[in-house]
Image 1 (cartoon, rainbow, N blue to C red):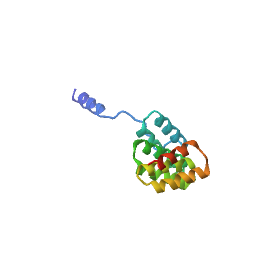
Image 2 (cartoon, rainbow, N blue to C red; image 1 turned 45 degrees about the horizontal axis):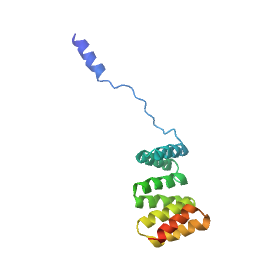
Image 3 (cartoon, one colour; image 1 turned 60 degrees about the horizontal axis):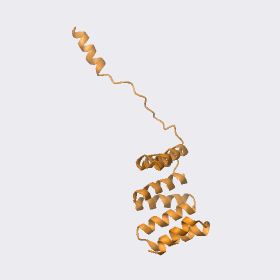
Image 4 (cartoon, rainbow, N blue to C red; image 1 turned 90 degrees about the vertical axis):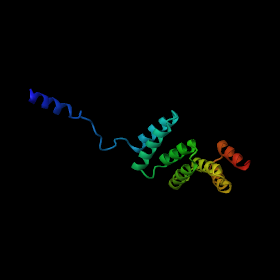
Length: 140
């Protein structure tokens, strides 16, 4: 009887087997796609995690930096957004990133710097959204 009790205690203390993934099977692009899906659903914390995972796998991934900047901008975390937009622009001189950087600089009260970036974006590409950003900055 004592042996049965000891055996029962021993078996109940054993953990249920778990599957542990030691290597992330997703590519940076898959993390970005997943992050984008979360972002569209308003799940910004989950989107942030996915974009960070993409950056961890590929430090030079423009879209991961750009999208992470967008997440921070949506939250009003303009300093963090600025950092990731600048990193995105270092990877690729993209007018969308310049437009967004101009906007977050404007939101931080840095009008002259914001004007420089939005003018650069407009030199690369005439886009109505860039013109709207320029108007917003000028009408401050």
